[in-house]
Image (cartoon, rainbow, N blue to C red; front, top):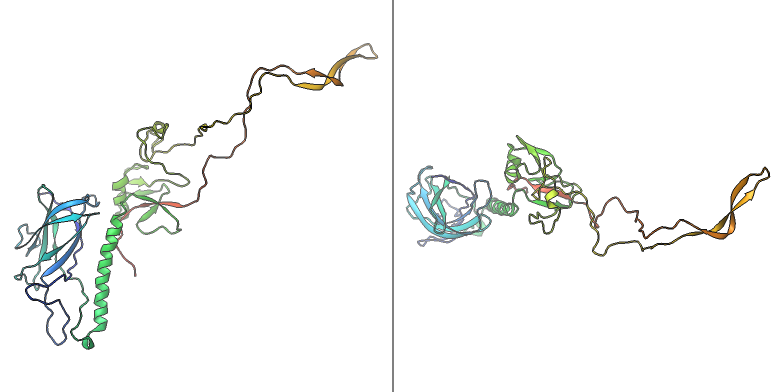
Amino acid sequence: MKKNLFVFFVFVLIASACNGVSSAQTIIGGEQPAVPRVLGYQGVLLEKNNRPKPDGIYIFKFGLCDTADCSDPKFPLGTDTLLVKNGGFSTMLTVPNAVKFNENWWLHIEVSTLGGQMEALGPNMLLSTAAYSFQSDDSRRAHKADTAALALVADTAHRAVSAHFADNGVPIGSVVAYAGNTIPRGWLLCDGKPYSIDVDTTKALFNAIGFTWGGSGKTFNVPDMRGMFLRGVDTSGKVDPDGSSRLLAGGLQGAKLGSVEQDATKMPNSAFAAQPAGGHNHTINWHYQQVLLGNGGVAGLLLPGGGEPTTSVPDHTHVITGGDLETRPKNVYVYYIIKASQTTTIDY
């Protein structure tokens, strides 16, 4: 049976006690703490492309195997109907008393949608305990340093899961405006640069955007959004009337993701126009007069006074000149960055 890709975290946390066993405690004096029979389990259900499964109700079947590759658990832990949101889910698993924790056990999980066929998730996961902050019966004998260290490890594990869920809230390929000068880990600047499709830090990004923004073969380009305003894709053509002439990488045209549109200026709804002049003449305050020269010749002179009409012109308009280098609203510079990989490491 084809297995789904499944990435998960397991935390063995004490939720309650069974069969009269008290909450686990650190007991000084050689006695071993009681082993809890209820395990808290948190997981992240992912598609093969490393994206979270769609939100909804899923049926989970849990069991414990005594080998890593078993498909028929030795100890079934029951079937549970769980809500999956952003890929995340959690449940409480009751462990039979017959399970001895001094042996290796692998958690086997099967899952299906409502009314669907169960599929095994793989691989089976070897159970291991996570450090837990224990409380001593006698605070005077508490190992404070050790307890603090265990508490820190438990807190670290919890924060790691929180970080994973936070990352899954921002899909690979998301573009955001960033106001800092140092690009955060897991993100790339939208500057049109090429990246390899085979490198772990950019492979997931290529799966998300492909060659939409340029590239071929073993390299692809991130979007180049330097100096650009962003616009939602309008395949209907009702909002972007020139959408069919937008340019894609490689020179192709179309109203598609990644296409670029050049400058344009539409006439305003209330159009600009020069005042109409109509047909008219202009006059000058001079008149033309011929005079006789001493050698018997004739000359034409323009003399003040009188007034002579210029050539008559019909109705006409005047061209408005001027303007700036571009048409733009008020704006502020930010960096556009694109989510390239998931990061779950936490620095302290």
